[in-house]
Image (tube, rainbow, N blue to C red; front, side, top):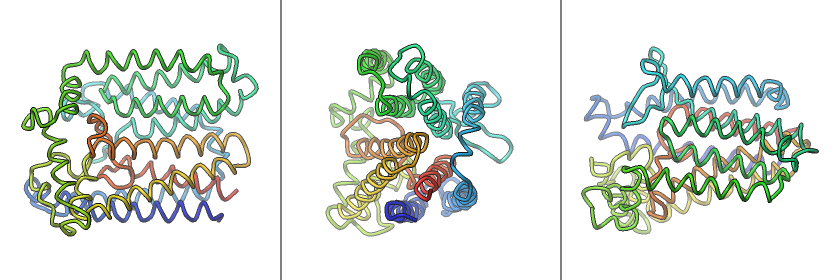
Length: 359
């Protein structure tokens, strides 16, 4: 195993271990209050971790080039799942969004694996059509239509944060593949226009923007989450209050074990803890890019790039939301936040990176 693969594996392992500890610390009070078991979310996260290890181990033993044969099948499965989640009786609604499919005791979030499978499909298309990528109708437009369809289905849930990440990763992959800038920039301009209407013409998203610009003006309303996040990060100082000693997790800060777990890390482990997380994700990004650069074929190069950028971008957005740098987006922190589907498919994505690095 090459050095970049070893470093990426070490960084990922530490992030997952920190996540297991912090999920228990952040969720114990909420879990006891609602389920009578302080380890409720910890047990579920550990179960998903075991499943993730099993699936990732299988992916690691296979040749990554075999997945290229099934890129269209995986994409079709993703689109079908994103359609099914919108249907009443199949998709499960929570918090005003329909993002989960639950079959018996099993539940999963289609947008998580749709993003990964889209990356696999785009890597395959960009490899096969590399000679035509600067041609708008044959090289640039077809993969863009597919990516647009995935984004549209995710927006219908609605899940603007995931849609933005999927679209951004797709555009980065197309740009790196050599797409004509004259084709890319007009599409980016059109996307920004659509984003404007999706934010400023939707009341609850507009309230988030207002809360982001001046959270203290409505600290009990639209600015509540970010104000409580500020209080958590500020209370932690440099060294933190100590593991398990967070006050904000005592039903002050909502979604402490999912979207705002970074704030609890800051409160309990301080600036040292949060900087450690940022450094680990920086190592992940750098080593992932090196794996992409050193890949032996174009498919592997684009696949590694898409996976690395997708995970890193989600981490950047989550940390930026927790620190008030951008409005609330509702994206979990990769490897750390509670979430079974996200953890499993992030581990599978890392296994693909390690697989590419080993060839």
